Image (tube, rainbow, N blue to C red):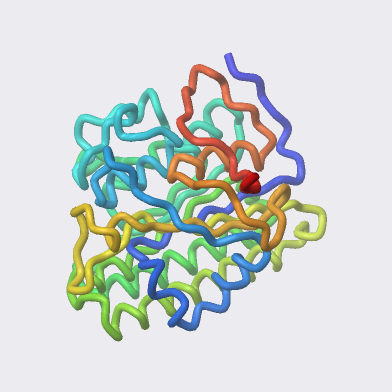
Length: 292
């Protein structure tokens, strides 16, 4: 049986922004993502050869810390998964370590028992906010409501989730409908503004000065110019992670990153040593080893 660890001052927020192309970020106004990078790092992630460049497999890898061979999610229908054996970090922390955890978003397979889901099976608090229709405009409204819900939960020290996951899906949906042009770029900038609101919510906490926050922002895959993913092009396979927090030196280069590292770093940030039986494939973010 796993030990019960005291909560302590450590807290983690993971913000998942679906389908954000790394190559376009330098052209866009993303001051809040830039601030995360300046306080820590922003580095590329390559979706590995075994993983389809689709949201289901990539988010499953990010949330569980294991690859597709273990979690079994191979498409956007999550059927056939092994998430009972390899649960997401919000569920594992709530069950094995009695931590308060929180997950919120609007894509059904992540949060509901539909399409083979949910990925986030049993966090301490779960909020599913459905888009009214499958359009970029409806997804922007959905993300706005998701952000407001997350602001409410994160800003309250009495609710106090130690690990949270916030999913924003409008950027990906915009690319599917309209390609990676002006509407897509505007959606990325809007997502960045929502990230800023989440960061502000942390600072509003009455206990913030005594807390040690790790913030991780991650995307799952890229897009081709016309919008779409699932192939093996560099644009589709290139994702990224940005993070700051205890143990992350501002501006220092990090070693090669993998999506599996996100969950591994969540545990490390909370000072939890993973049970070897979890067989995590990732490892906490580490500094790059200088070339000899």
